[in-house]
Structure formats: C-alpha cells, structure tokens
Image (cartoon, rainbow, N blue to C red; front, side):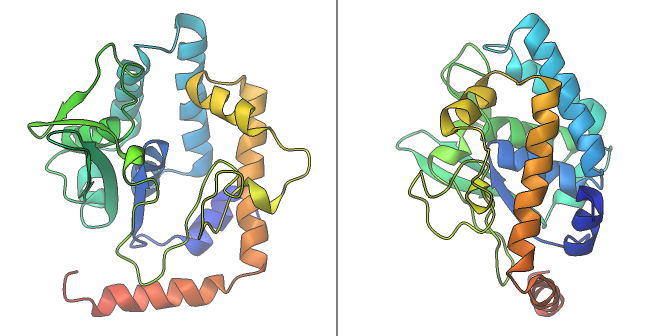
Length: 235
C-alpha cells in the first residue's frame, strides 16, 4: 500500500482535520483533494526556491505563491467546517484561536500563513495581521489543536517522546532505527533539505503511519468518526 492508497483508505472527504504551523498546511492540502505525491512535488518546488534564493525573511512569500498555485479555487469551501487552523493572537496576551470557516481561498491561505508565522523568520517583522488581529505561529499555544471528530489521531513530525509530548499516535518514535536526529529535523524545518532527503522523510512518514495502523483499530475509528459527523447537529 503506497501513501496515496493509505490516504484514500483512511481519510474520507469529510474526515475532520486540525493543524498548527506546518500541520495547518498539510490539512489544507489534504482537504483540497490533492494526492500526497502532488503535495510532495509542490514541497520540492518550494524547497528548491528557498535553497537557491534563501529562506529567512522570504519563506512566507514563497509559501503564499505555492499555495496560490497549488490549491484549487474552491479550497476554502472544501476546508470550511472541516479544517481547524490554529493561530496565536498576541494582544493583549498570547491566546490560541481555532479558525474553521474561510470566506475565500485568500482567507484560507492567510490563515495557513498566519499559523506558520515564526516571528522574524517567515517575513522581516515580529508578527502578522490576520482578521484585524496581530498573530504569530499557532503552534506556540495550540501545538496539537483538537479536531471536531469523536476521536483524533495526533501526528507529530518530531520524536514525541523526546519532546515529552503525550497522546501522540504517529511520530518517528514508531520507527526509531536509522532516523534523522531531532536536531537534523529542526534544521530541515528551517532550511529545506535536498530532494533525496525529502523523499526519504516522505517515505518514513508513511511507514510511521503504517506501523501505527497495524496496532490500532483504524477502520473502527473511521466508522465512529463518520457516524459522529452524520449525527452531529452542528454539521
């Protein structure tokens, strides 16, 4: 089973999603209906641009451009009510906010951009405006935002055990042998790795999910969540 078959088997068109920072980007891409291979190719385009022309202070502009070209025109419709994007409002004190309704494709991209806004890194300013609020990276206050599902499977690209995170379902901890170190993963999060490394990380992420699926009642979780959505008065 390859990554796209796995994706289609366990993620339906109504599966609730939630993410902060890079996780918000992944959620928007999944909701768009794109294949995981298409998402990987778009990631490589972004990575090549940043490797060639630099990442700091311009990653945000490159990200916006890639999302504008990659996401379909109805991405906001596909995401509204299904995808929760976490952002951090910084005035008057840091406060995590969940956004799950999007007025336009631009509004969705703004939400994802804001959720990924590392102060002083995505752009040369300490914060960004989102819906008339000064905001920064959603992961600072909502590292693992909740979905609207009856049961949520939490996914982390970093070794959850090493970070002291609890309740993580899928992470590199599931396949600890011959993995990149947390320092390498952190460095690649800030400066894109070479394409062959991105291919390997893609493969390892799928294998992590596959190992998790072998030991967990995935079909039951999908059924329970589908039933919850059908019977929820808010849907």
